[in-house]
Amino acid sequence: MSIVRRMSVDGLLQRIPVRKPFQVGLLALIIALAFCGARWAIVADHDTSRFVVAGEVFVDPAQTPVHLHTFAGTGYDGQFYWRLANDPTNLHVERADGVLLDGPMRTSRIAYPTLAWALSLGNARWVSLALIGVNVLAFGLLAWVGAALARRSSRHVLYGLLVASATGLVMSLARDLIEVVMVAAIVGGIHAVRERRWGLAALAWSVAVLSHEQCLFVIGAYALWRMWTIARKQSRAGWADVAWVLPSVVYGTWQLIAREQVGALPIRASGSGHIVFPFQGLGKAVFEWVQGDIERQALLVFPQLAVLGALLVLTYRARSTVAVTDRWILFVLAAGAGQAICLSYGVWEGPAELRQIVLVPTLACVAIVVSKLRVPTWLFAGVALVWLATAGLRVVAI
Image 1: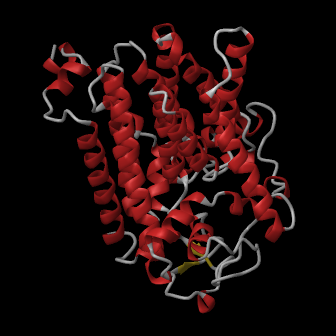
Image 2 (image 1 turned 60 degrees about the vertical axis):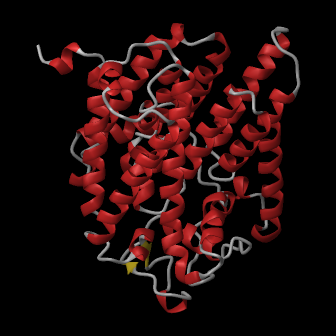
């Protein structure tokens, strides 16, 4: 039997000279920089605007204020965040800066482009670089917070990398998408709640809901948990409720602000029908993938799903070892998983490194970290291998 098999994960981690959450965050930031640098040099042909993946259907390069590489076809979501990052106050769906939004819902996801606008100092020349920069910084912050969670739970700080290991974050880094900021804000809010820093939790979760409406399920689950504990007289209404009340107010207020330009509440005006009966969309997509109706570069979805399944099984096994004060994290994970299996076929049609459900593996990792479960070595190895394979693919594939 090899030494790796005989030694626990914690024993192996103790041999690595990393002891502080900040060091883990810095390590993650370097990893993200290395990934983006390799992608920039190889598949992006030294052009940061290729990360945007702008498509000629929605983008007219003749009208953009700076050079923006345009691909044939519809492009990808990053083109819409590039447009909003040029001017976060212009929420009109009509073409601006050469880009036509594909629907009002994009205006709800304003946090990431606003941060990129701020980092670029409002200079259109720097927007494509700023979009990458914000995601790299957010990835480092996510691992830092994950490490702080781990240390608070008497685990090695390198468990912070496990919290930041969702493959959907690789896709987000690769294509200027909102998931890294969203996940960092959600995990930051969870850490703040555990530390009873209610104002910081409210701030983090306000950023989360302005990153993606999917976060409403997570924060709504926390709100229901709070109401349940209050109803059973296990707790009283107070500052702990600011963590979910303020983000709800912030989201509702932004919807009203956006309505002035969009003409209707963005969350209602989308009309895209993303939520269906459980497994209706996912089941159809998986059936087609198994039948071979899937692009070759998307075949990694199978090991990615296998890792997700392993995380969920371990989370279920760990549930009894989670402290009573942290049980709400399991409830939040259940809400996120429930939302994931109800996504429509249109959302699942392209596996996209599972970025559609990036919150689920992240919340599962958080639940494992705060539990007392002895994490098997093979989980770390499997997560690392699948993450590296996904990153390798995104270095050579737009």
